[in-house]
Length: 152
Length: 114
Image (cartoon, rainbow over all chains, first blue to last red; front, side, top):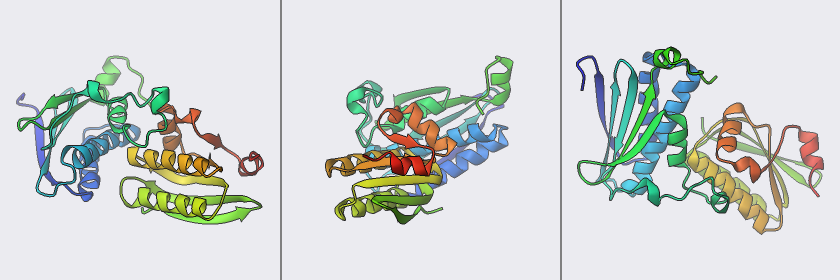
């Protein structure tokens, strides 16, 4: 981690309330980092989906297990990691929610939304074997410098 | 804000005005319960007015899809009315616009049922 990177680490209970809490914490950090409102909303929602994934599928709503969330604010980007204590999974195992045959499925859109709302998204193996979701958003000034359009 | 739904009837069409968030937990549960009660009560023509719903997550989307299939299985139709930009965008990127009949005018929504 670079010297000018700020890092926040939060251990969340495997509770429904943790979803709102994680979203709220991350949105405040994104706001302080200077993201515009709509991007703050997207970051918050991506984190929300990540914690829902850890709560429901990773930790299987097991109160004994924890969800670790870290947020790193570097000069060029914001990285959020959400680590559960489940069995882990491969992105390739997840059905495409946009495929015609999956459109009427009632679940399976969370990972898609995380990928849609962040600049980078990947699933890694956490230190204890669970899933580690890694999502990265470039800071607004980096988008501007690259000439990227800022969504409204 | 917790999701709240108020039902009104225009002819054979039931319009449910929702306000709040449709998210994992209470919001999704309220949506599920409301639609299920309608379907169980024999209501075949249902419009969900989402004008005051500015937030929906994947759980809420799943519940909308579940409601759609529940009503359809019972021989009815469920339509959406007055989507906010955020809900509109989510339905668009998840391709659910190809599933739901989305209306922007209440009178047209009521008339659109067969």
